[in-house]
Length: 400
Image (cartoon, rainbow, N blue to C red; front, side):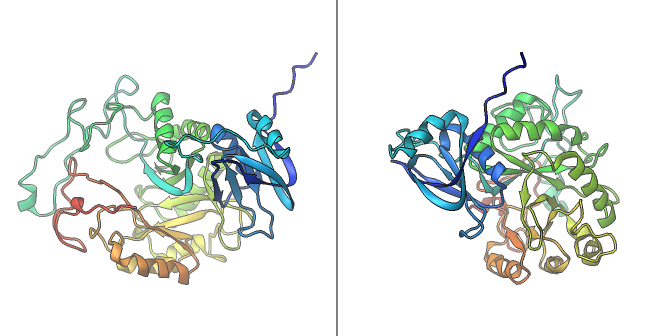
């Protein structure tokens, strides 16, 4: 006889909403398809009793409402709800008017990761025996531009495993980013911290930064590890040699074909798009002119991706005030990256109101970057002196 069919991951209930049960909480997540909404609930397991996908006429429309406990079932036309297969019994009780009994533990976020919280992630750390040598743990001491400041600090490289290029010694030790156990641990830590999206430092195949080895081969395993914890990943395109808007067009073609269909790849909706698009951050985007980016990112550009198979949600880096010109270059949003208040114009929090207004005027999104407790003096003294403000910037890290 044929093998039995696998049990369903979830079940759909049409025209159905749920009230919250005792001790329940709910969270709304926009930008997901109905299937992704159910998958997010399924991955949360005991932290999500049901997910409700709102109708096109609701506010917000086509949004995912994740509910930690269930009360009574309500008839609501156009709304779809689903429950993980393991929790169907709970849902059935709720349909009969019996409140679900399992409230989440007080010290656990009942919803896990938030896809509004993005964290920069670097999978470029290498160490034996997984790798042939140490990379990035042996980072060089970056010299300050002021020779008087530079003379006060050591030169050369760190020497792992006891001396690492970090102010803190990792609980996992000098791990290898290629180790599946490391990937799993990092995804669990991200989920527990409420981080929903990891912005993965990325170089095209067969290329890497000057201190490391190619990391593109790790992307499939990282996506698989992220999926198990309900985490999303998007790529952070680094400033590789001879990068241009046209070469980024090739990068998008490759990455979208290779990775964007994975359910853990992060997507966001942009104005005018028929569906959420795969997200890409572009580091040091100002090394290419706004006019050249327009050829790639504006409708009608000479090699535009808009409306085609390689269309994407693109985010540029705003460091200095003059980088505001990129808000009209066809990008969908901008971020500030640096976490020390006053180090750059973009990282200076007193300007964030102006930057939010810039985003509103151009119908794009502002992603302010924060770094509670940020300190990098183990590899750099670049934050000492100069910049938008004054003083030791590592003592004034931005906190969300």
